[in-house]
Length: 46
Image (cartoon, rainbow, N blue to C red; front, side):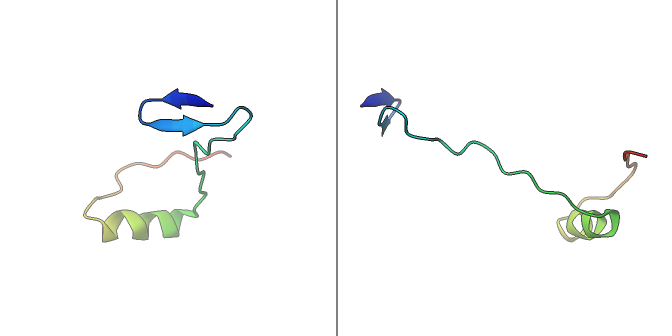
């Protein structure tokens, strides 16, 4: 068992470190505006 800070982990135990989400432009703009922000510029892949 290993200690990192206040947490203990077993050898070989996995640690979830990231969630990745993909949104269409309209969905993204809706989320942004509903949370008090404004979309000024957007870059996308061709």
